[in-house]
Length: 467
Image (spheres, rainbow, N blue to C red):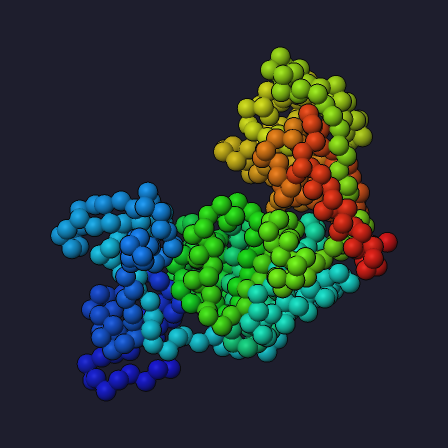
């Protein structure tokens, strides 16, 4: 504990210390009296950073890194009595302007108590997982950056356990971040179960854990905008997922939230072309897990030409081979996902396919019954679910076939197609399945997706990781 200065009127507040350690917040977001904050500021325990700064004659937001002139606006500020610029990029987290400050802790930080054996997990890592787990531990010990390139269904979460334990044993603060709220909601109880003796904070829009100082934080990447030099170990799950790939401010937030000496672990089944190239050229520290835990190869996609399927859908018809594929799944009582490039095309196909079985359903991101429809699929009440790319990742159904209708469409990138193919054969009881790309002309993305899956199978075979 920091000893207060020789100022008899000043009372050091450890709660304020815990609250502000590793944060960057607007003054109005700090639930402590303004006088108390001012006293800690005067005694060098709190620092104010300007919300906006000018870099090479360009406005820059200190919270999200935005430099785009079109994403700044002017408003009459009651705070300074003048017109003030503000950042529109991160406005959803409160207004950062040229006359506001980001408030953080500058005194000795609140400490994380080291734990001897925080991990309580009785599972076993596979042969493919063990080397990756060891590399994560090394990254923690030596404050390295590491990419874990693991096939869909390889068990990426379990690979993190030993590294997280090592960090917690050393009194380090850990954050696992994902671009998606549903991943945060799924991982929080799972990780709390294997680290039962530590406080785990779960951060997403509307979360009540926002003010908790915890040794282990599971967060959306958006929430990292509230942190500054906070974490000794940073893990980014699904680093290739939207919106992380499309939003530079989220990547900025990750770098701001980690300490200058820290480890950064990226997890993905589908690294970008740039990252794949860096791995091959030895410019990026990485390890692959080319096999699933159940030691079966990844199912390879079949390319099936289906003609001008859009033209047929416009006439309320569907290509015969897609119809036949659907009938076969229904006859075999094999559940299936059918991916479509957009909602309107999917909704044209739905009534045609419902003539085969009225229980066939469709789902998309804005669907108010999205959760219920996915649950009905889990309960096996729905034989076939039509979907947009919202179900390309993050969902597991044990015994599934998958079709992509219009695999040549731009939305079906190499990454998306690999993820979609990864829905098939995930369980040990049903390690095989059919993945079909119905197309009106092969694309480079389709061919690259096939090659990536094939190469992972070849690598797994060479390493003796598949039977």
